[in-house]
Amino acid sequence: MINIFNGSNKQKLMQSEIAVQRYASVNAYMAYEGQIYWTRAQFFLAANALLIGFALPILPTLIDKQTLYRIIIVSGASLAGLILTWLWQRSLKAGEYWLNHWRSELRKLEEDAYGDLLLHREFPPESGRVSATKIAHHTTWLFYGVWGLVIIYLSYFAFKLSQKIC
Image (tube, rainbow, N blue to C red; front, side, top):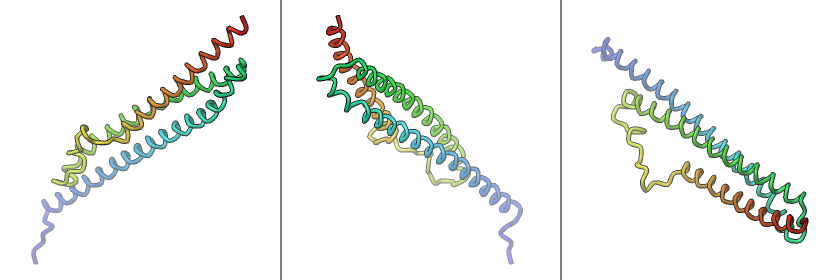
């Protein structure tokens, strides 16, 4: 009977198992960061949608009843929406930093863990690929646009109200 698990083969097998365990640990960190990334994005999307749902129904009433109270309420919601959108954008950038960090660590460990199998070393090129993170960034710009339009709309009615007072 031939022992295929001599000293050097046993050592290579142990090194391979350790490499796979390291890869799995780093992959778990990356999965966690991805989950946190999208959970934060959902929170900011929901918060912005709720603010829009609160502020936009008040806008048509400004045509008939231009009161300072309504203008202040919608202005406050718009300011909160702009701040939330800015925080959302910062959160996306921070999350992408960590996702890219863990992806680069996986690239380093991949060859030792899986040999010729290319999971992260040959990531698809940026051009021509639809990226969910790019869509999330475009969504933040959409909300910036909505809040900007609300502020322009409010400015018109605030100016109109100031003309009535003077």
